[in-house]
Length: 133
Image (cartoon, rainbow, N blue to C red; front, side, top):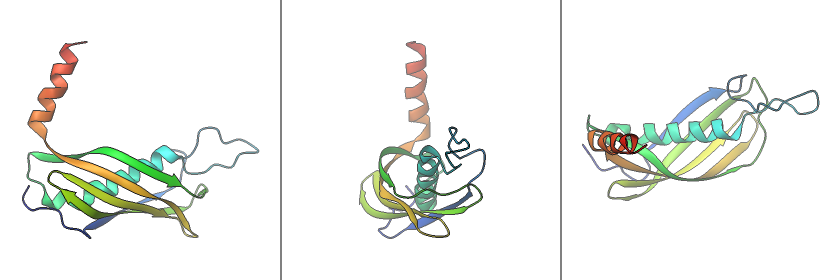
């Protein structure tokens, strides 16, 4: 790492709820709302962005743990802000507090961990698995 991530480092991801990230089972009775997997993805993107300036060119961070409460529905057309803030660093493992808000309320909160990895080493590990299929 170029520098060790610091407690308090943070980033945001913004999204608009649309046909690409809403639930697939919306119908005449069930409103079209933000799907939980897409919410989680954007919380991870925010965490990744928070520590990206600390990484060398050959490094990336990968998610290893996430625990999120999806607290409220967000209808199609709404804007969402996903935030991640570093709360703990243990070597290559960084823990984040994550949360998301729409224009009205807090819609999600939780914890997320990422591990800083060497891309080349990681790619070799993936390649070994592919040859074992």
